[in-house]
Length: 467
Image (cartoon, rainbow, N blue to C red; front, side):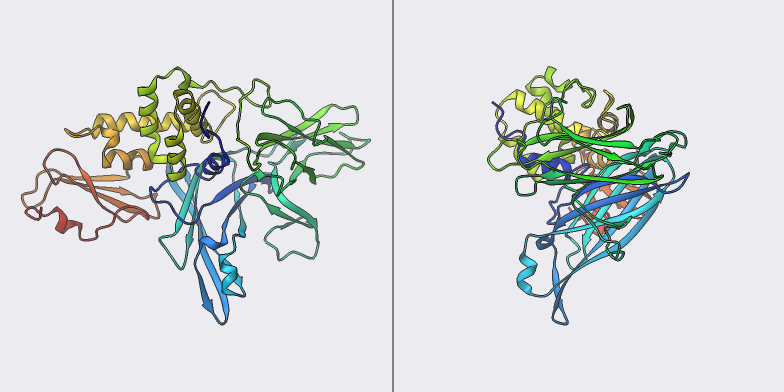
């Protein structure tokens, strides 16, 4: 049997580690989700939801209040090129020092308008009062153009609560007379059983639905089969409104641990489906092992597990080269696995969580990652190590092609060194590598990118005779 392969720890680690950028484990551990809604005929409004535990940030005493402040940044890229960024602050004010140790969640959302296109987003949350406490997540997303002819649905937002409150316009979670409190982790349980959902429908007209329409919503299991419990719901809407707000709730607290799919269908009164959308979520139950299967049902696109044909040596290499993207929790889970099949399944799930388009057999994210490894092996190999295992290889694999490289192979008073510049990272950063032993093994000496090694006197370190 696989040993603790897909426990809640793995689910949460995978959800919050879409693309880990730093090897140091932050205290802040982000959960992130998002949903896109139509803004106008041309643009979409993207909502990004995130949360973290309030006892993981620093609170300072100001005027008999305890204030914790985080700085949020959203950096936007297209084709690996930085195009824009936004920044904001979030403050939590508490009355007593003891409250700062509570394990309650800080939940927030931000909204931005975008043209339809392919983007890569990087969300960074930093503790203002402890600037080494920072977490960042990166994901790629295709924002599709609004459908101007057919009935269609927005993405689904999962929530821990939805309440009608037209007076709550100052709440960050207010929209369309509702207060929708997001659940960025997508995890529910017997202690958190109420799965609320919110979405919007566009282009529905009285002509298309003269007798009204039906909102059907139900849960599918890991095999894609509709569950009888919780009972599927069907709500008759008498009047067509464009756009319209659709929401509902199901009690999922009795489900076994695992991954599930919330399905939402819009049908006419003859049961003809007009539009549909779904959203994956997770159930954690104490004392139960989390397992997840991929079924051939259309609700769960089948993806071949390419790792099943790999032997132990190949699997170990796959793990080691993917290690740059893993945090300590994922690494500890790997160490707990005591058989080949468990490790094969671990890698399958690891890469599947990072697939920007799970409906296809090609994982574009992993494909790009493999290309970077090949390039690193071809260009950064030294007498001592493979290219992917070198400092230059690591930086190239994680951050991609530099904007510019200065090479200094033969300067009489300095060791051979290279200076890599990345204009798209944090507004522009450098990495300085030096061959201090004359073996072609360029070690990272300095970078001003957050989370990387720093030595602002790196020119002294590169001076011959100091080592």
